[in-house]
Each structure stands twice: as C-alpha cells, then as structure tokens.
Length: 65
Image (cartoon, rainbow, N blue to C red):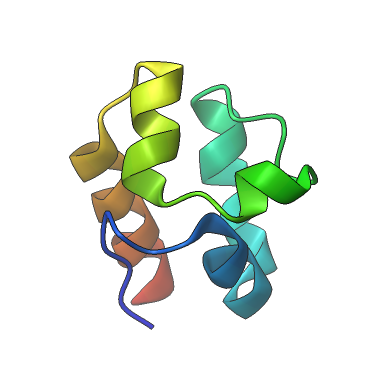
C-alpha cells in the first residue's frame, strides 16, 4: 500500500492498524469516530494544523518495512 494525502484514514487503518500510532502522535485521537475514518489525510491534517506531507512520509516509510 502506498499512502497519499488523498488516502482515506479508515482505509489506511484497515490495511495497517499499526499506523494508528502516527495519527496519535500528531493529535488525531478521534480515529474511532466514523467521520474521522472517512476523512482524507490532507483534510484531517488541515483540521489538526499538521503537515500532511510529513505524515504521509512517515506512513510510507513505516509501510515499506
């Protein structure tokens, strides 16, 4: 799986539940909420005031291992 800023958070979590740690690190503690699971990474990062590119890089680095 390759994650992009347009990837849906729920899809990422379903494919790789261990990625939740990276969302928690940047303050996204609402991962169980249906609306959060349906958001793109870009939208969620915008709401939480974080860098979507940095999160995508962390996720892809983790998933490539």
